[in-house]
Length: 68
Image 1 (cartoon, rainbow, N blue to C red):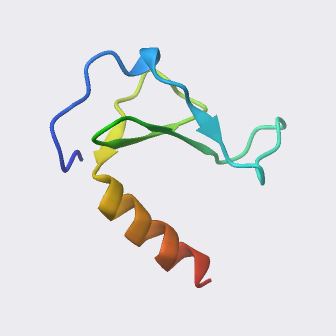
Image 2: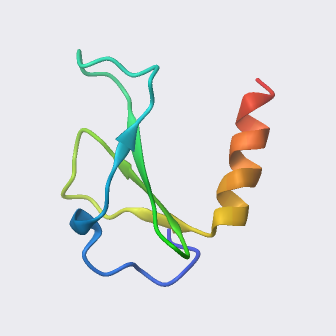
Image 3: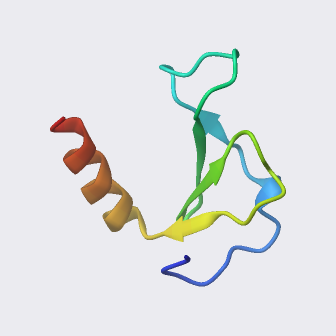
C-alpha cells in the first residue's frame, strides 16, 4: 500500500539494508531515500512492489520502532 505517488524506476536509487540483517536469509527490508519519499521493499523478492512513505512518516515509524 503506497501512501504517496509511486516513484518511477525504484532500481535507480541506492538501497540500504539494516546493519542487523545477515546474509543468511531471513526477513529483511531495504530502504532508499529520495528527495521527497522513503521507499521500503522486501530484500528477498525485489520483483514485488515497494512501499512509498513521506520522510515525516518514516521518521515517525523509526521513533516508534526504536521504543521496542
